[in-house]
Image (cartoon, rainbow, N blue to C red):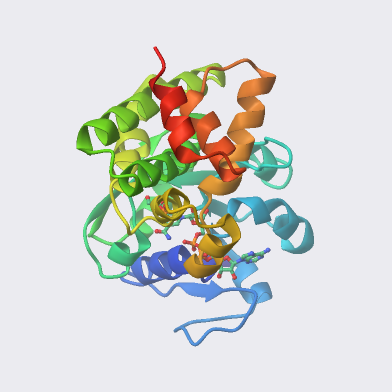
Length: 298
Ligand SMILES: NC(=O)c1ccc[n+]([C@@H]2O[C@H](COP(=O)([O-])OP(=O)(O)OC[C@H]3O[C@@H](n4cnc5c(N)ncnc54)[C@H](O)[C@@H]3O)[C@@H](O)[C@H]2O)c1
Ligand SMILES: O=P(O)(O)OC[C@H](O)CO
């Protein structure tokens, strides 16, 4: 293993933004499935030989990618993805736990549009890990325009980062239906309560939902067309087909599959998640205006 070296795996919008940020203070390699004309682009084998890896692959693809490509050689891993695996309902930390020990892995959360990070605009992120030593080993790699915080509440950060994408779809629908800012603010506030209720069932800390991982990322994502998930909601409000919306988007919108995962988990464990459930029904074809009536029922 190449001691002290760092690489980003995944050269999508977030992988490229993290590569830019992590290149400010030191050389940072980057790798992806297809070759890219990016500084310090390397093949996967070279990247995997780095001591520090930042993995920015879509949540639904992680299990397959790990099975096909990952060999643990003591690397320290930072997971940059946000989502819950739809086909199993497993959280990302559960998937990674089959490949990496808890002391070697952390999860990034917080309000962070790639488009702003790649411009060097200031932001704040949380590195969530069972190991504070892991956080301390990654922290020096981050540039001065990114303030990092530590939290040991991995499940809270994971659920917050995944759930906010589903709520962003709901908020985009609300915007698209021109229901007004009162409705949108109420939806976001009730969504935060719902997210925290869901997280509590899995042992998440309430504070994670009041901080950067929850409220911070939700306020960002549910109020901006910079969010892919918010734009999915806008498309749904215009009765566009989901396949057409995603084709036009050309990037991942994790909330679509995570809505499935949350719906299945809340049904399995009898957790009250009305907003996420309506998003799932709308993604399956329910008229958004009918969902609105159902959500407004006293
Ligand atoms: N874009 C952002 O602002 C942002 C910010 C924070 C977190 N994230 C999260 O980062 C993750 C990646 O999002 P993104 O914005 O980079 O998406 P993107 O659609 O821009 O890029 C996804 C990348 O993953 C690659 N990919 C897809 N399937 C793959 C597979 N099976 N194996 C290897 N690579 C594969 C694609 O080729 C693409 O380069 C998501 O979980 C997202 O929620 C995104
Ligand atoms: O574009 P979105 O909706 O995937 O959001 C991107 C980031 O998660 C914002 O923190």
